[in-house]
Length: 301
Image (cartoon, rainbow, N blue to C red; front, top):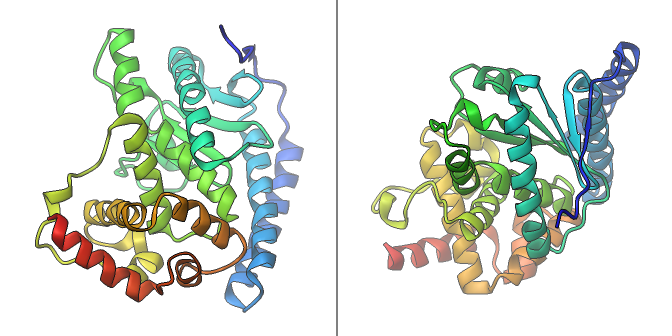
């Protein structure tokens, strides 16, 4: 039984003036957010401004993709190009499968429809963020919107059933949905390493997929968590950075319980930084948490 009635629509006439107005509004909110990040203001105020920014960015994305075809139901809006009709249906199917599980695990309920944009090529996905064509992401969450690379662009199979199996098992939907939920719960106030660790943890729990095994980095120096928070994307070994992020979340769950994840996200959503959130939930500051993590990891490897 399909509990999500499906609506398929054609693109409406252009809305250039409205899009231009939203871009100006989004720029103004972005400047305000950047200013608040530079000066010292209460975290709750930053969270409120970020909420406005995210919703403005989401609205801008809805308008800027109105030229695309649309699949929608009561929870999701999927935008795609005509050649990706089958891929769009698969993306929607996977989202319907994973969202209730992620929402259950994090006690989350979306107040608005979730927008997913299907990009036909890796180049078009990267271009939407101004990234070089060499970037290899299959999915990206940013500011209330999930963008995914069309399954047909990276799955080397012709059988639709096989394509679906590969996409569900190793595609980006579960991972990016978790990023969205974490972002909303923490009100944007979350270190990159923590959101990546939580997203990988949930993805592994739901699909069995993980980027690297526990012993793949045995004996290799780890990154400082402060450096990971400041410069995650610039770290020279990205696989190590992602692996360490997942391992840190696994340590947190094993030692302090899965409830610690929910409590940390709640503390971050109230405006605490990661050091303060860890102290509140675990009784340990970030440097003490890092020392405990290294000791725990040494026993695992």
